[in-house]
Length: 454
Ligand SMILES: [Zn+2]
Image 1 (cartoon, helix red, strand yellow):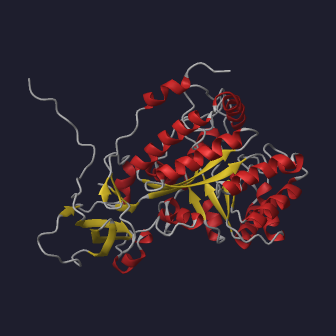
Image 2 (cartoon, helix red, strand yellow):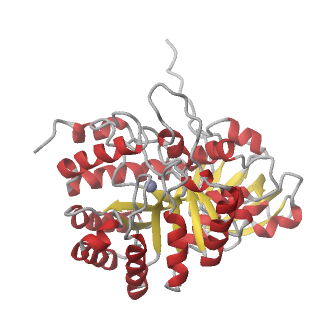
Image 3 (spheres, rainbow, N blue to C red):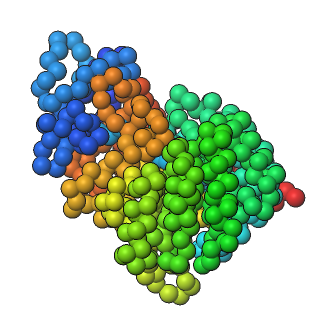
């Protein structure tokens, strides 16, 4: 009997030396501005680079880096190199609970009910930590270098989850840069001032962002302007940036987005503001959409779309094929001057049964769903560079001399090849070193999904 054959998990092996060269690569110039003069018709440049001491020491067009014969060299055979990904909207505290709590009907309301049930019974510090770490191991193996997560901040959960997040952020700081925003219904700002203050105290103590979700459903809370004024005033007073969940519905009468833009302008808020989802903006009259896009641009507000979760939750009615797909109008927002981006959102929880924090999957799906192709706009920036700017991270999202060699190497030579396969054999470099891209096994979490404890 012959030996069992093995399948290589990566398409190429990088030299283990502290200095080596990568040649015959293609890099999208929108992610590597110094290569712009060498762009081909598809906005990619044939190029090579020298990696030294974990950094990109030199980057230039093909044939520009002549070195002695002693330096190890990896030949990309024209494969595309991307910077490690940045995922600005995730829920690490919710991830991977699907095996123990599902969404009964696949709707937003079904998700909310299921999460409340599970959170109140099972989200101990240990449970949250193990699921967060599992998610981070997956994201790291897929090639992600920075993540912002929302943290459910309801009642006692705030005091459980924030310290765990801070510990995990410290443990992971050399692999993934982490940020967190408190997530709570903004209605409590008017209804329960003490709880709002307690949340703000945790955000301040653990270095997070002010988050929140505005009133759900097809009605506007009467108190929304008051809530938003207090939210922005609190954020200004304590130096928080803002990241809100907004209008996750295809009901075009739901418009907290306009209230937020007005409140940001009214309160002269100076920090960064990011709004997630903004689905209903796609279901208003063109005149209203245009007016609101203009206000968002004026207020310096950015928008992140979560297309994979929108596909799962929006316009779901039992026995009926979905007509509305729920993505925010990113083309119109970008045209109005709003910074837009795309991210993962939920993974294997009642808001989204699937997903693995793989930004390559998000890139592939978003290109189809949002029609990023057949466009002259640099949409690739929406998967890293735009997020890095929003997160204030100078070392992420672009490829340039002097930056860490944090790269994702693929076998795809064109966007069509890149997006036609999942790129499961991609190579990930972190500070110039090839990492193990083996994904954690789901069975590692089985012990968390036994019978309910209470
Ligand atoms: Zn979310």
